[in-house]
Image (cartoon, rainbow, N blue to C red; front, side, top):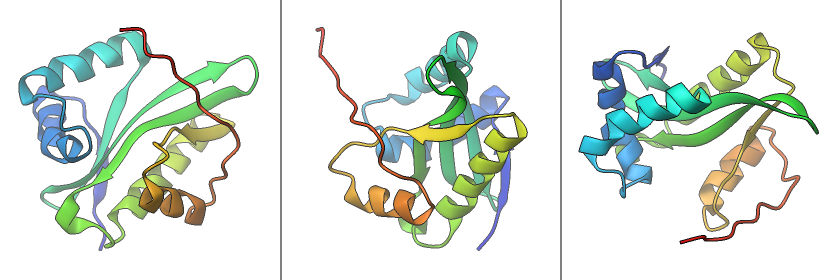
Length: 142
């Protein structure tokens, strides 16, 4: 299966991504989704790419940034395929689009953080050529 991939630019496109993203991020309310995505876009360059074949099948939240240590990179914050559409190639197609998008913008790497419990996702990322190269630490402040 294949679809077309677009970057969500209009309010309608961004809001249309919500049902798919909510499968991975159920804590986000529909009323907060659009303003949050727009705010993150304004302050951090966050964007949503979505794959559609008439209905949205997969969504990726990403941003391009740069670190002193590693240079310019594309960071994937979310990559989610609609539950009933998994294992049909949509995630792979969107992943490959992100790689091409990063290369076209001069990024040296594509990075993502994934919860340790998401073993199915980890297998997918390894199959796509990603390697585990760092530990991610956090400290709750509230």
